[in-house]
Length: 98
View 1 (cartoon, rainbow, N blue to C red):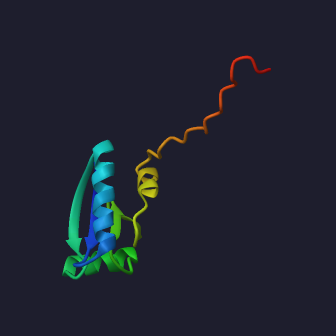
View 2 (cartoon, rainbow, N blue to C red):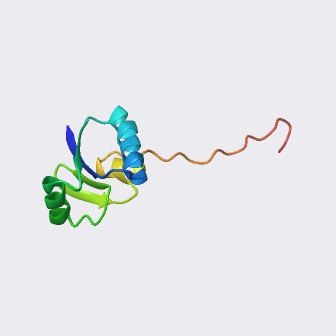
């Protein structure tokens, strides 16, 4: 199981977005999410160690993934399970056409 540390702050729209992304990804992959206030001593220490400049900051098993707007695709790729791409649909030939 992957431990996700989410560094957040109050009144942060990007933090709410990150929580929504983690909720969706958590349906597909086993995650333990730990939310820490960026303004706390622990939050500031983790942010400094991981070079996280602003909220939200995200660490996977203690390793920094990034900060700011969280990309669901990037998170899934970091977890080793990028979503499969599908080929564009090809229109079927209508009957009687060569």
